[in-house]
Image (cartoon, rainbow, N blue to C red; front, side):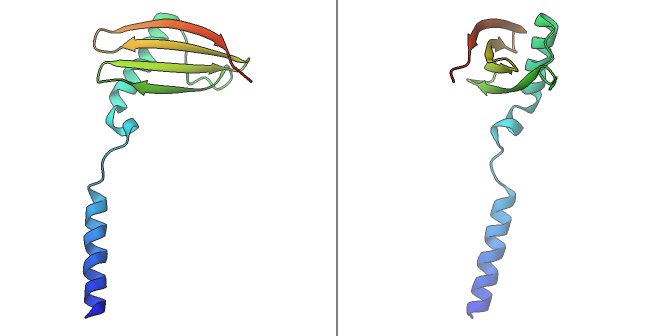
Length: 99
């Protein structure tokens, strides 16, 4: 009886894990690409260029508004605020990274 209970619980947990909640990146996948294109179109910055930039972070406040922080190889961070629904992007801040 305990083996059948174990198998039942195992199968139940396996099927529940298949319906997991999507991550933020999966949820906004198309929006990430639009935001990257907006930065490139308006500022000519290819944030995927690993020779010039160390990396970036994106955070979405809602479906339209997002913030992008771009880390440059020298100790500087550029901050962009964008609205992908209106196709707007703005360089808000360039600041030296605190070390």
